[in-house]
Image (cartoon, rainbow, N blue to C red):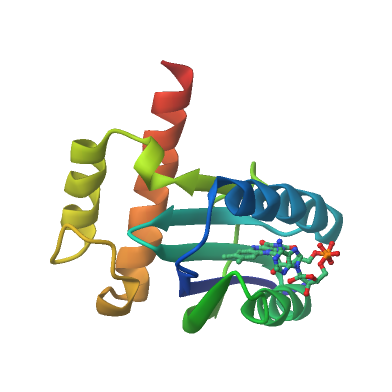
Length: 146
Ligand code: FAD
């Protein structure tokens, strides 16, 4: 298996609701577990930022399937690169809704990895996106265990 990491962003449809996010998370966990795909999906400021890790052919197929989903639009591929090991290996796909977390801490996190307090991955480098997602995972784990 050739292990790759793919990062992309997209915009959620304006009528996107809690049930859509729940459905996306449930489908993702089920399909990704079957496919050996791990990663993190983050939603905030109407934007999705997702990292997929796994076999190159499989994450490519997964990305193409996701990009056709009518619940979001304007997908932008930020990175697709070979990696030695997984960063999000424990998660077949964890979806983090940023609006459900402490807003000031979330804004500080976004500001730390970009030049604004609004999540706009198109203005971030792939390295900033990866580091932001790592920080979100740590932040989410802390919030979930407290
Ligand atoms: P089904 O769930 O049976 O879906 C069949 C078709 O209907 C697909 O084309 C699907 O896009 C569409 N569909 C399903 N539900 C809805 C709905 N409520 N509204 C409109 N159309 C719908 N899937 C993964 O497997 N892994 C991921 O990591 C992943 N990440 C995602 C991230 C984002 C931002 C979005 C928007 C979707 C993501 N999905 C992910 C879902 C993906 O786009 C497909 O919906 C899903 O993989 C299809 O699952 P399925 O093969 O079981 O088919």
